[in-house]
Image (cartoon, rainbow, N blue to C red; front, side, top):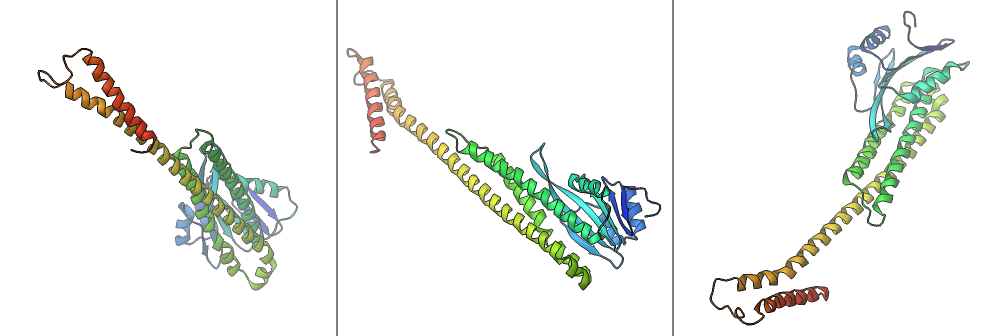
Amino acid sequence: MRGMSYPTIKHGRVEWINLDRARKRDLEKIADTFDISNEHRRALFTRDHRSHVHESERYTLVCLVHPSYDQTTNDVQARELDVILTKQVIVTIHHGHLLPISAHFKQAQSDTALSCPIVIFGKLLHVLLTDAADTLDHIASNIDAFEQRLFKPNGHGGLETILHIQTNIIDTKKLLENQLYIVERLLMTQTARMRESFALQFREIRNHQEELAHIIDTDLQAAQTLHHVLDASIIERTNKLIRALTVMTLVMLPASLLSGIFGMNTNHPWILGVRYDFAIIIGLMMLTGVIILLLIRSKKL
């Protein structure tokens, strides 16, 4: 486009402009160049939590929110890619760096031809879905690592870890599910001839989306199962601790009772004063403790 110095690929009449880490003044210039309406400008200038499509007679604005995996924090983060589509121009605007899109743009710079904007967008969807598959691979690795720790002898996993994994899966599921309707909406905006020409490409995209949705459901079920197993193991350890404390209390109860009885401030409480009175009292304490312990072990008490 004239008057614009952003990274651009142009072959024939088709042009691709890519803005990585766009600034406010960049967005204002793009909005003015393509005569973006005030309502759509708000969508372009603000971060969205879900993907959606804005249509106009002059352009189509797609706000695509994509799950991106951060290996440093092991967290799924929402990255937004705004795409402006006209008959001859596609503009990709990054809100946060999306490496797969930048890599595809760099690869396209060495190509000798450039497809029409709607086909380029379809290829970008393929690139993002492949990146989403990598995100699910990372999540699956985290699930496997947690499972190995949980089922080791005397092993246990952290509740915070499994909750973090489940949150990542749900965030990914939510963001990808919201992208499902974009393909249909874009096809509806095209002519019948264009829909027929690109039906196969977008059918492949839809199949890829459904495959990822199936993987997400499987991972979510696995994480929920591990969560239930973790809860059961925590309950079991708690019950063992309570049982040990109960047994200890029952064993010590007769000793406490006898010491209280023979510690009364009276002149002649039973055995006191006779020969070996201390040994007799200690023996009674030990005998009652052993009897109670044997009853507990034989499950008669």
